[in-house]
Length: 104
Figure 1 (cartoon, helix red, strand yellow):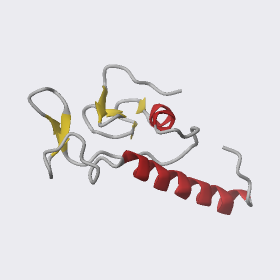
Figure 2: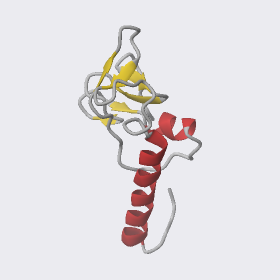
Figure 3: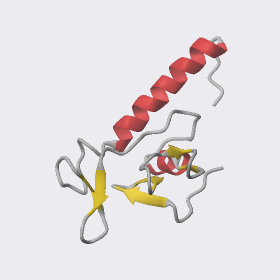
Figure 4: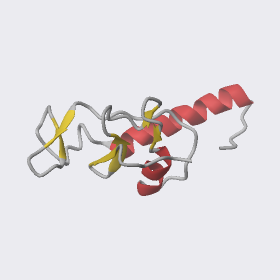
């Protein structure tokens, strides 16, 4: 199960560990994949986590990318596209390792 305690932060509708901005963080015992998959309309599967680019909270406490100073930057915060890529890679890896089985 996932853990979304006080160590999590929301960046443009996706959850990450606060200190490291990772979707999966062993240091923080955090895994936001299930919540992020559900938010973007996916069924949860075992996939690699995504990481936020360099970001920091603005004066209102909302995270913005450092590259474009935007809180809704689709280039830096394109989570659905990144999750889709990660899901595709996980499915391909499962097919190679599992002989075509797609049980996730």
